[in-house]
Each structure stands twice: as structure tokens, then as C-alpha cells.
Length: 101
Length: 458
Image (cartoon, rainbow over all chains, first blue to last red):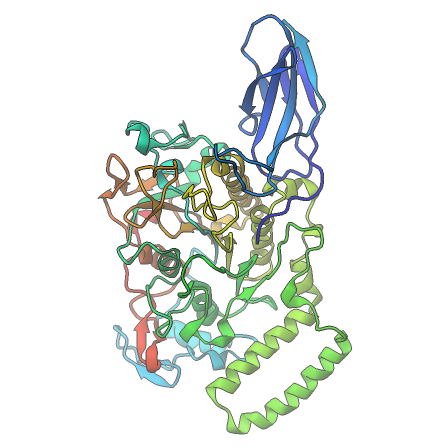
């Protein structure tokens, strides 16, 4: 019996200075939760988000930063020759927040 | 002398009393109170002194690698220590995998057993039999599942079966040998009730509680009455088999018609926030249901975390590029987070309801995984060393029992064998392991389990 994840997980995030804070995840599939940090449109970090409900990205490189909360969506365990998932993936589950350095 | 079935059997105490260990004597309400008193008088069980009234077993089918979870070796060479890093827990000196951050906050409640091992083969089914029954055996000489033993010794507390397995039976895990989740000599009346469906799905219905097509409750009750009349006739030529069948029928009717029973399986009764806390996945919602069932009278609930090891994300991390292609990615993204949420939600929830004191939660698996990573970066079966753990009841948390050597290849001190885990649970549940016997092959009496409890746990 393989697992099927239903519904739409959602969470609200907000900024306090450069510290991003998340609320509870509704319809939480219980898979890996992470902060995805982008700078000038390019992903620069993915940081585990279950351990704490707040995160401050330490990088000070100038640029426009954007942060979103993501949850891993399991579809199946298929992987390519490099061992990467072919269908399962992280999806955005929150609003995006940003700041400029 | 205790009676097991129709046999008189000697016990170490030399007590000469009738036993109620026949499943047939259980009747519609399970074991009768007078019979329970007889067994208590015989010293075989003593529920009044039992610190542990209930057990929830989380069975990690496929088996997590001990070096990647609860027995990490950060100082070992690259090809042994693996990809993950350890984190500190709330107990100084006990570190666990970084992907169990919630569990790390409640390690003071958990007793890790890091020196489990067995020598009877590296198949999943070998380990399943050990952990579910406390024995290894062949199909023609089966031993009873622990839940069936508890059902037989204590009977049901409510209309719910004493022993329930969620969400489904273990299916194909490699060989066609027994999985150890059947009543065997405990008797058909004590077969575990299998939920038979995924409680995380929106269309969830308990497969085994659905009336057959075209059957109304009225018709079911009419059939019950008819059966009762037939049973009256049968009693004149009663055999053990007819008695057991009667109990099984009664249980089935109770399950089909009792509103309380149906409600026990209805997770919509739970607040959304709590369902989210457990995780909206098969494991999480099964753990939530386990709590509901214990709360409403079941005594022994097992959650099978996966029913197979093939073509799904599960703990069986061979990374073989084919039907057993679980890797670190699956551990990191799915398995560890799911377990971390579900296990810790269950402990919190039981504690908040005052049930943790009387409920032991046992997290068990079939074996460990090879210390050395295989060529594809996975780990294969390894029964020579692994880690399982217990909490709740009167288990002393915040401790580690036993240890493995520097690369997790073998127990270094205090080796623990699989039956000792069940022996500990049985003893905690008030069962005298010296005097309690069960019917074995050809009704020959056998001890429930041939092992000493793990003394450090209590």
C-alpha cells in the first residue's frame, strides 16, 4: 500500500526584520519542511524548518532575497540514474516574503 | 497445575488451579471474570499490579539503519558513518539523527536499546517473527502474536477487540514465511483485528466493518438471533472449535452494529490541528487511531509502518536502482520526518490524556542495516546489531541500554536478544513469565517466551 497525500498544505509566513517566522502548517503531510531562500531569483539555500518555527538567513551578500516555506510532496519513490527523484518534489506551501541587503 | 486448552500442565510454582487459558471459555465477553480470578489466583497474571495496561507497537517494517538513526557513529570512516549528522537531545550524552528534532526534545522519556541482535537469518520475516512473537518458527509450528497473547490472557475491555493491527496486514516482504501477526495457538478468537484501510485517505472506511452489500443492520441482527438459536443447539455437542467460532462471530456482530465501535474508528472526531500534528499520512493517522483505540478499550495495537518493502518509499534502504531503491533521500524527505512527527505526537497526546503512564509505546524493527555502505550508497540487512526503543508505562526514559562497537557491527556490551523486548512488555503488563503457559504444538504446553526481561528498563 503506497501512500497518497491528499489536500493542500498551507502556512502563513512573515518577516520581522530579516527573521522569517512561520505559523502552523494546515493539512500537514508530515514530510520534510524547509525554508527555500533565493537571491536575485536564484536558489541559494534550503534549510530544515521543522526544528524551529523561525529562521534568519545568515548570508550578507548584497541582493534581493526571497523566502518561501516548502513541503516535500511524495508521489512515488522513482529516481533517475543520479539518484534524484523524477516525480516527487518540494512544493511551495506559503506566501513569499523578501528583503534587500 | 494450569490448564491450557484441555491439557493439565505443570507450572514452576506447583499451583494446582484450573486455568481459563482456553479461548473458548472467553465466551462473548472474552475471558470471564471468575476465570480471570482463577488465573490471578494461580499467579500467572496480575493485572492489579501491572504498571502497563496497554501497548502500542510501532513496527518499522523494512528496518531503519541503526547508524543513520539512533546509533550514529560520527567518528567512523566515511563509508560507515553515512550522510546524516547527529544532534543533541534533552538528555546529555544521548545524540540521535538530525532528522528527529522533535524526538530529540523528549529523549528523557525514551529508553534506547542499542544492542539488539539475532542470529537466525537476515530475512525480514525472521525479524518480524522475533519482534511480533518473541520466537522464531516455521509455518507448521507457529507461535502467537503478542497482541493475541494479551487478548487471550486479559480479554477485551469493551466492544473493541483487545488486539488490533493498523493499517493493513504485512504483505510481501521477500519470502513466503510467517510474519508473526497471527494468533496461532492462542486460538482463532484472538486473531488480531486488521483495520484493512488507510486512515489518512479522505474516503477511508474500515474495510472489516462494512456490512456486506445488501445487508442492513436489521438483517444483521436477525442473523445474529438465528445464530444464537443455532448456537444453543451446538452447545449440546460443544467442542473447542465451536466455542472459538462463537466468540469470533460475536465479536464480528459487535463490531458491525455498535455505534461506539464505529465511532472509535472515526478520525473526523479529532480536531484538524491534532490530525496535522500527527501528520496527514498513513503512519501519522494510524498512530492517532491507535491512541483512540487504546482510549476506548483496546489493549494491544500495532501500527505496521509499511506492508511491503517493494516499490515504495520505506525503511529498506538497499538503493539497488530497482524495486528496492530506497536511499538517503527517502529517509530525509519522507521516512524520518513522518516518524518524528507521528511518534512524538503520540507520546504527547497519550501524556496529555493521562494514558502514557499505563501505556508502553514500543518502536521495533526486524534488524539493523550493514555498517558499511554498499556500492550504491545503501545499506543491506544486518541482524547482528540494531536499535529499538520503548517509552511510557513504567519504562525508565532518558537511558541507553547496551552499546555497539565503533562501527556498529556488533553489540559491545549488554547484548539484548529480541524476545527480551516482549518479555519486558509482558512482565510490565502483569504476566508471570515463569508460570504462564500457552498451548504449543499438539497442545503441548510451552512458555510464553523463553527470555528474561531487560532489567534496566524498570
